[in-house]
Amino acid sequence: MAEEQQLRLDLDELRHLESIAKRPRVLSLLSSEIRDLDAKLSRVTAVTAAARQAAVAAEKVPVNVDAVNRSYVTLGSFSWDQDNDKIKIYISIEDAEQEKVDTVFKPMSVDMKFHDIHGKNYRFAIPKLNKEILPEKCKLVVKPNKVIVTLVKASKGNWLDLHLKEDKLKPNLDKEKDPMAGIMDLMKNMYEEGDDEMKRTIAKAWSDARSGKTADPLKSYP
Image (cartoon, rainbow, N blue to C red):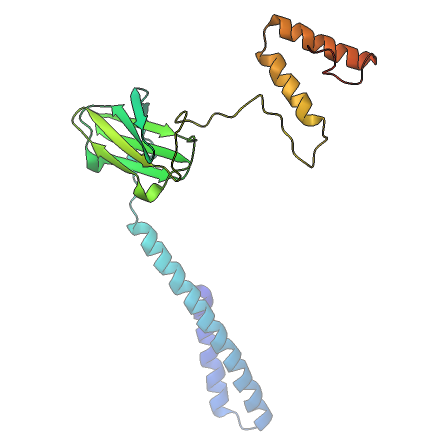
């Protein structure tokens, strides 16, 4: 605001000087300076107005403190079934209200929040679905003692599980990595998840490889 006032005062004085100037060169210099200051004043005025509008808009936006500090109880009791086209999830929860449920469907995830049920908030989420769904076709229906969620499959077929389960025994065969890296990862996973006999066998293979008895760490594996 102070800069804007100073620019206006400078312009007033320059225009006064322009009105009493006689020599063409002086008039040209004053006119050029007036144009520059006038353009600068327009920019400053626009910025000031935008800042004022932003401040007013920010004051009008309500801050939901309860939403920020809200905590949720995880819902773990559910069942599900499927056909070729869709999945149905049945979540056990009583006295939920449709208008107090926030649902977010994404191609590979589901997140549902149930608010203000006898003073508590509940949440059911699947962060990584087994396969893709069509979010725009999915829906949630609230019943007196349960909630039914319908997920429409992006491609027809049978799901082995709702959750995506990464196969730890699948070696990482990134083309840019050392070709042996995938085998090493595989052996590490087999060692971590294997029984005592498997661990002894793999440990012996590693020991032989390090001592130079064999160049292939899988050579001694039956």
